[in-house]
Image 1 (cartoon, rainbow, N blue to C red):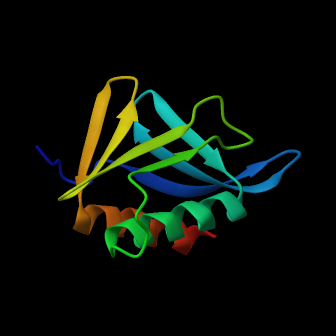
Image 2: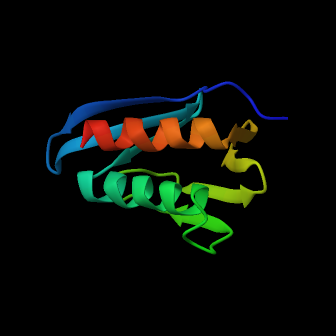
Image 3: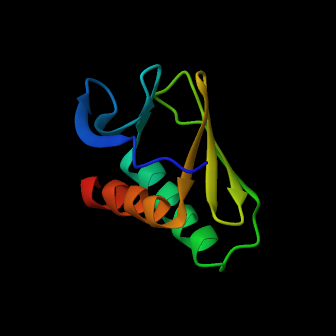
Length: 105
């Protein structure tokens, strides 16, 4: 079952790496992405949503995070792994996540 958008994206400052994009996917899953990582993830989300990429999984291990992003492509959206279980997003919410990441770069 697909859920309403239950994620948050914001900019933060890392004392060494500079600007970071903070992606919160669950209460216990927060990723800190460099602008380049956020850009790559945003493009990958658009590519699978639009059928441009044949990939069935998106994986990213951000340099400033202890956790990784693992998203499995489904027919009607994506399933993103979180410690609490899968966060399932339909294609409109995948697009929203991509846009939010891009807007914080």
